[in-house]
Length: 154
Image (cartoon, rainbow, N blue to C red; front, side):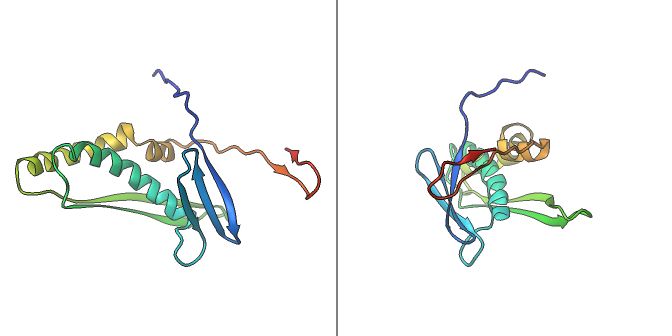
């Protein structure tokens, strides 16, 4: 199998606004507040939203060429488990698509595409769920400083 790497690096920057409250910002300046507390999505919920959103975009982009949906919801679920060593992770990840279209030619065309589009998103196009399923190492580097001194990259 031949792989081609897209040269565009994807990135977000996270800033702390208060204990347990953060803002993620992309290069275009879009922002999303999240964290722990009332009215905030948790990081785990953001992961579920990313999985659902990635497939939703794939399905929505194709079906909306035929008609606008009258209902378009995707529910993402997963169970948090704690392994014997105390490490946390999710398992049993699942997407439930709830879609409706007008009862006309465009709606019937769109409805007829959904099953294939969901499968294509899962098997080929959704970068988020494919990365989760494939597994990708998460590296890190650290820069720590004290006020008034330069940081020490590690």
